[in-house]
Image 1: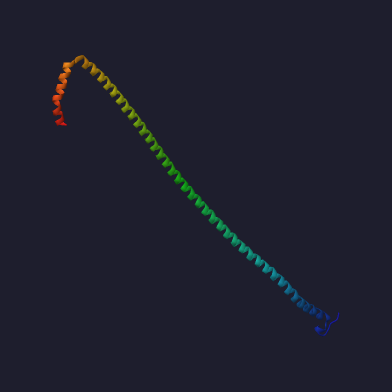
Image 2: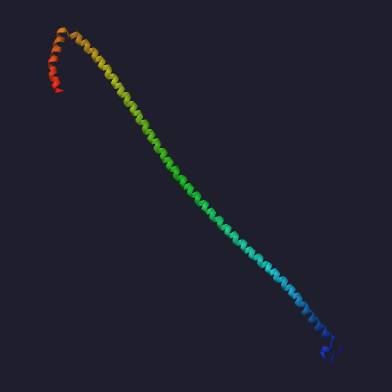
Length: 168
């Protein structure tokens, strides 16, 4: 082996120095390229994360909007059901009142018909009784009155006429 007096005279030293210089020069370029690639990759990931955050915010907003619409639709459906129930109750009570009024009208009409039938029957009985009484009176008068009794009755009636006219 060779021992050189000074280390810089040794070719191994210069090979090592050139190796270090080569790697420093080449490493700087390679490191710049690697760092640029890594920075580009990091920027792409940042962009994707930003887009994902934006998409998530949009999705959350869409979910909130959908929930608000669903809540509004549910509230509207409840209001419609409440109005329908109120309308059904109102219609049922109106129908019941109308049915009751119709029943009362029918009852009143039936009572009026019964009263009219009673009045008609009473009138027929009175007319029949009056006819029978008239026939009976004629028969009794014919049997009991003669011309002299008729003349006495006419005279009596004429005598009472001025008193009757003054009283009226």
